[in-house]
Image (cartoon, rainbow, N blue to C red; front, side):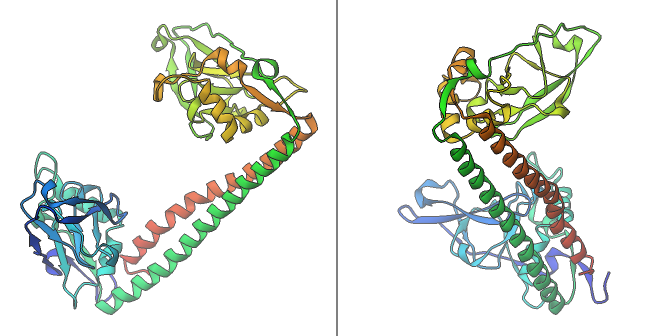
Amino acid sequence: MTFGWVTVPIGEVVTLVDRQESPQPGIIYRQIGVRLWGEGAYERESMDGADTQYQTLNCVEPDDIIVNKIWARNGSVSVVNRTLAGCYCSNEFPLYRPIPDALYPKWFYWITKARWFWNSCDEKSRGTSGKNRIKPHKFLEIGIPLPPLDEQRRIVNKIESLVSKIDETRQLRQAIQADARALLQSAFQQAIEGAGYRSMAEVAPIVRRPVVVEIESEYQELGVRSFGKGTFHKPVLNGVDVGTKKLYRICPGDLVFSNVFAWEGAIAVVQPEDADRVGSHRFITCVAKKGITTPEFLCFYLLTDEGIEKVRAASPGGAGRNRTLGLNKLEKIEVPIPPSDKQLWFNRLQTQVMAIQQIQADNQVELDALLPSLLNKAFKGEL
């Protein structure tokens, strides 16, 4: 530990807050909640004083430490900001006030975002009740690193400066992704301008490849994510566990639909790395006719606002598994078929954009790891 730093129980640097009031019928009370995993406090829906079962409510002020007794074990602890001043909470949310000459409120705010702090809350919550509520005295026993006050402020300023840069990077990436989507949409509209529409049955008919299931064999299943997020690999399925379920071979280049979730964009092009995979009858595969269209072009169209509405119209019923894409209705969906050179031009552009997005996705993992690493260094005195 850096010189001048100590580890102290929270109870030594905070005082209990008591601003309790009896709720009055006819008076509207703003309510405060606390998100999990250090995501901070937020304002919930307001309520009439006549609508609460609690005998008292506690009013919060800026810099109060607020604890959700039930979910503290999942990081539901935070520090109240100015916009939430005047909100109320029940006695399920103990409030504490940092002692001014010992604990800088923002220092504790960043502590609430650290995994080691969540783990400490979890340890103090175990066995305290049937719902693992953390008892206030147990919360106050948690040890936190405490450098001198000036050092707390210096480190907080450093954290906030670096976090600001991380946020700027995220915003830049989001802007790039939005621009890329807009570019593709514009290019697609240019590609299909004046194009005729033909049915899926004509240009990409349904193809089924039944698999003869053998009890001693293993089968690798393929899944399709909703919202156009591509395919994924399911766990290996033993032949003996297949039972009466019918399996069908799925091949790279297929346009595949999850018939129960196609209405929310579970449509994808099967990739080379998906070779030798199978799917149940719930997965419909269409094969684009060469020289007429491509699966990538069709997939993009079916995920546009116009395309997905046609898929939804072909998926009658309620929500979820009661909304199933019909085979006959799928075959009747009409799709734009411009000349091949326009489709191939668009596909090349789409490939380039996807390559950029993949690079960003790979880097996102590193970006997401920056804050935990930053906080780890901060609370070890290495920042």
